[in-house]
Length: 466
Image (cartoon, helix red, strand yellow):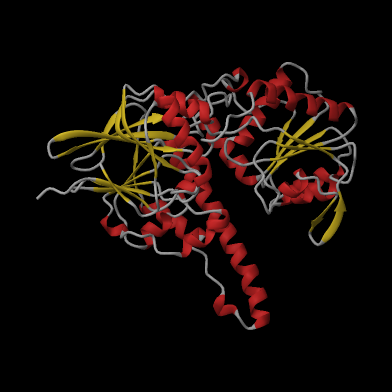
């Protein structure tokens, strides 16, 4: 007897991170994303997956962010051997992201192990979920299928899928999945992460067709973003004013999408000659440098509004790609005219800490935040007005001018999510994933009033029959 098809979420349900969604048609079982839990939910990475990876026939990856790919190595460790479907740019980014994640886990383990040894508690320290060697092995044996946008492809014996550009990061997709249930055609759509229409370097999310069921992200379902053009003007003004005042600009940034967006604006400034010839722009993030190389490789996908990124993207005279630690340290000798782009984006690690230590005490300098600063991070402390901060056990006064520009999000806001849903020719059922519950509650009410449709907030592990 044929079973009824269902969806079941093992992450990103009433929370943002840990995306992992099973679609079981009764004939095939596929997984959409397998991401890492982050922040307050990080402990869930050590919990059982909730399903048997050996039973998964295929894996679809919507994009390369850690919260969508970070637990894929666990699938292989537990017996998954199916095909993996993603845009080739996503495979490129996912490898960088997973190698970086493994490196951080190994470093953190060594530090914690040494401290625990002194207490005789080394057996209590959790080992890394995976190592760099694990990632190398996985990418040797991964059975990858590189998709093209807007072309229907066979996933399993009874499932076909069409990947469409989600405009979130390079290679990102939303996926339309077709199968039959009791000889009736069904289409289920997973939004992945949808992009901000005005991000500048990537296209607007593609138009969807129809859906019997839509599983849609709701990260910013409760709000609208600040206007991007206004944000870019503000960004340029901070750069120009600081350099004219004889200072330097520090920009903590995320390695994927945000760093490339910032480079694009700086290239635009260089071309319009508002960026002084004497200025030096340093991209001091090994991961961002690798990701930028991937963006250059796939420059045909960069079809946003930023004209300066349509030819030789991210290349201009004032830009220096920092190769090693010694070169990074040498930046400290520059007294004025430096624009330093470094990770981590929330100042909770990475090379930005060294630059903060050497620059944040100087009132001529500017600290320019272009991304979200989570509670508990050093970045959030500074944004909230801390007069002193602690870096490498040293207390440092904050005298640099602190600027926060909020318009650079890579996620669609409430208005854009509603407009995208309104483009469906037919949309029957709506399920909210990838969002915090309080934001989803607001978004659910807005969907009801704007689209005159009811939405359901997905619970972790809940079976949703299709």
